[in-house]
Image 1 (cartoon, rainbow, N blue to C red):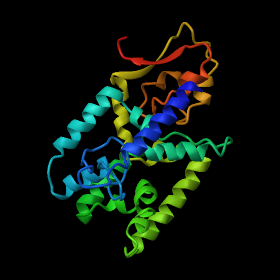
Image 2 (cartoon, rainbow, N blue to C red; image 1 turned 30 degrees about the vertical axis):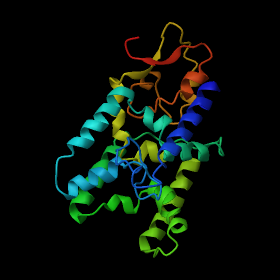
Image 3 (cartoon, helix red, strand yellow; image 1 turned 180 degrees about the vertical axis):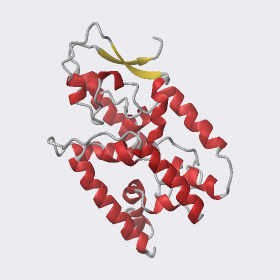
Image 4 (cartoon, rainbow, N blue to C red; image 1 turned 90 degrees about the horizontal axis):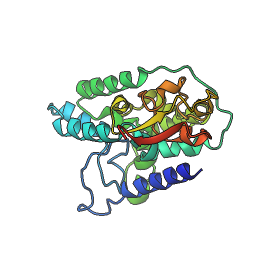
Amino acid sequence: MRLQRLRVAIQSLFFLLSNLGFSSSTKTGLCVPFLYCYGCPLASAACPIGTLQHFVILPAIPLYLIGLIGLFGTLLGRAFCGWACPFGAFQDLLGSFNSKRRRLRPFKYSKFIMLVIVIVLAWITVDTFFCKFCPAGSLFAAIPAPFFFPTLNLGVFFFVHIATLILTIGLVFFFSRFWCRYLCPVAPIGLFNRFSLLTISLDPEKCTKCLKCLANCPMELEQTSDIGHSSDCLLCGRCVEACNIEALQIRLRGK
């Protein structure tokens, strides 16, 4: 459990770093490679999907966003989803209360479809429309906002946010990391897994094909060849800890 304790510690650290926006000087505007709503009263960084929508509305080519996500992805692949994303950590917490989760058939393209929908809606509405429904925004912005701004007028989208969050919580409780697997528009960063500096490697000579690694995967990968390579892999290390013969290891590519 050492690796998972380390992961929880790092998730907690990133949650803290994401909430250092106590003043205008600590609201950096830096775009992070995971969902965290800039509408959160204490947010210190910008959400990549919110940023993308702003570029669509302008309209302008999001060179800054492409470069930053490209850098993050090339270095660590989708590890930010497994080790840093506060909403991912929230899903892990929910999952810990239900050890008998149901399995769903994988649909690898749904998250890419969601990203296209986000872009199209921003273009049609000339608004950051996805932000009005985003469950991460519900949890980290909509709910805390009235406590920080007591005179805030709660409009219809506040209740839309609450409904979205309740629905997402229900889905995540029964289906492991449902949001990450099927709907998160940041998830396409997983395409970088195939060549990112950080990866998970399998030693075929040690592997006994017991498949404990897949049984413990929160993303329910179906083949050992997907570990560290599939766009669904979070590089979270659950499979590494489940392998008691050390056939799997988190490493830097080429080492």
